[in-house]
Image (cartoon, rainbow, N blue to C red; front, side, top):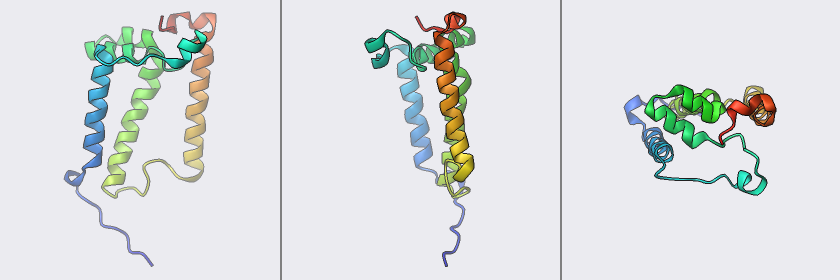
Length: 138
């Protein structure tokens, strides 16, 4: 029988701060245009993927222009950034042994993944409709 592992103090974290710092550096590089990642899907099809405009949305957020950020990619602002914050918090809980996993197990984890995929596909479809014209990154 395994005994439960002791909870570590928050200051014992090593992975989470490195992951957060690296993510922040990449976000700043993408948002300022220092690092440009072309969308291979758009290059091949001419159609925006769900993530097109995400770098410009980050740039808008870095400038404090929420309206511009939402205009470039509302999905990145409303779904992906909060999801990144939740995953980062969950990673910190996992690393300090306050949680056994960083993603929910069983039905809850599957439901969260299915919901995320469904929202992504719905955004992709909506963005391609005429009513979604305002949400196109071009």
